[in-house]
Image 1 (cartoon, rainbow, N blue to C red):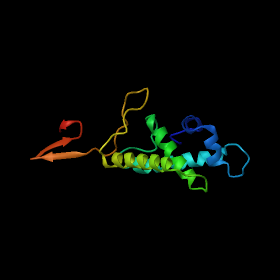
Image 2 (tube, helix red, strand yellow):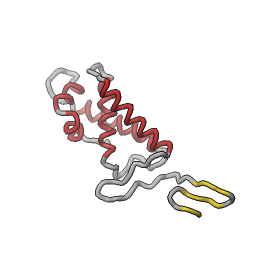
Image 3 (cartoon, one colour):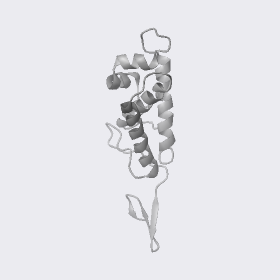
Image 4 (tube, one colour):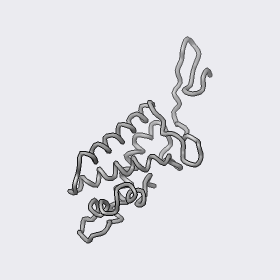
Length: 141
């Protein structure tokens, strides 16, 4: 399941840009299969960063992942002979930088919208200090 939908992409980038990015046959409309494939690929790329810390795919993803997914999918669609801009590249680079920080444990993906809960990390980090063990966010064990 993709972290962003067609509607997310249309709201973020506009219908005209979606046509421009996906219309391989020049029929003047969004190619839904091309768009869905790009969103699935972008979600898989996101999962590759999250997999070290979370069970993927996330059953309930924080809402902001739709934006990252959209930025990554947009960048990937530009690689198919369509237009590309500095802004598209920068948004992609920013998304990847954030995901690298998540993978390194420097930032969390935050709470899931409507639930207030943060997805549980698969591999809690444990620190030791003179024989006492400490887990991130839990104090002494």
